Length: 453
Image 1 (cartoon, helix red, strand yellow):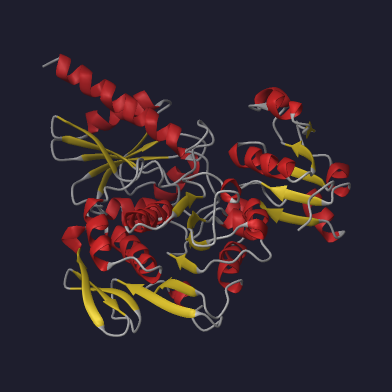
Image 2 (image 1 turned 30 degrees about the vertical axis):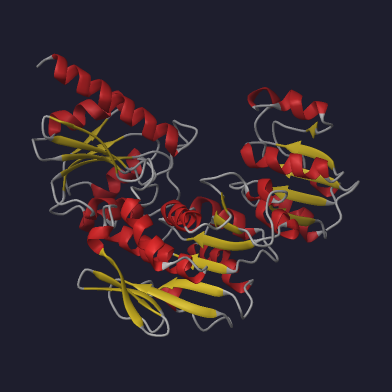
């Protein structure tokens, strides 16, 4: 792809958009940024203006797209009608990962799914790093893929977390090893239909070649149905049944099946809570094995892996009440998995900005597990209508109030769980900020309780 003197419009000017601008400037492109936010709400604008970047912000003008040679979208930018119109008129519209792929040496392991991507991606990276490989961690949990074009070499491994947003606008982006963890309704406010969401994910498989490898969840009906749709090497992982090639769990042992069968791990080796994390570990270890990681390093790394912040993170135990931060649980499916990871009675914190999901599965999932629900944010009325009558409900207007009410409702041995089933964007910049505030308020409460003796 020739970029010199090409008129490129970059949509979105957060971390990824800025990395794209740097890359394009280094290749001589004429760069214009558009963002729905006004200029004074964007960071680092003067620095990029000095480099020659033009800004057209506070909305998106249709004529700006129609004058472009190339449009590059940041993750999360929706398929705006004006962008789709430009594409219909023959203007190339791609995501940041597609642009990076055009220039990227190195071998790629791509991880996607509705839940568990960050944990799985990080574990793959840790195993390969501990195995002595040259490896880069990219995507939503690392730096943008485009940042590694100049640093990567053909022998390097690039481990990247891939969202449906990024995959939607790809044409060639291809991974040597792809992992599909699970599929459940997600981002329907963006994709409009579940089928659109699934098809975006599926592009990762469509772009693979016969020598490439795909790791599929054998227990996910939708994903496993893809195994014959593309001529690639298929590996499965399962908690429920033996697989002919891949990883499976039986009697608390994870077995690796490839040219024979051998035990790989015990479930007691896994320090992460929840059966869903057993699936994540199987997927990660299988991909790392396929990349050439020794079994001994896989075992050692899994045993040492404690997971990520904001994922079933134990914050404090106050007078016998455990507080857990799972701010990353932004879907109904993720929240249900969080609930199923604990045996004790739960006071559950729900709410935020709705992603277009269906909250009715909570009615069944809460029975015998959730003793009270605390609600906050834009989606609280929708959630309330979906679960009314299942358990007591109470609203709060701040996280300080949520934490206090959670503690007051709990008894020693109970759990106060933040697993909101919604995005954080109604009150916060991201789920990390939400999780940090929750932890801050829990620790404030802990100090108060200790002060009272």
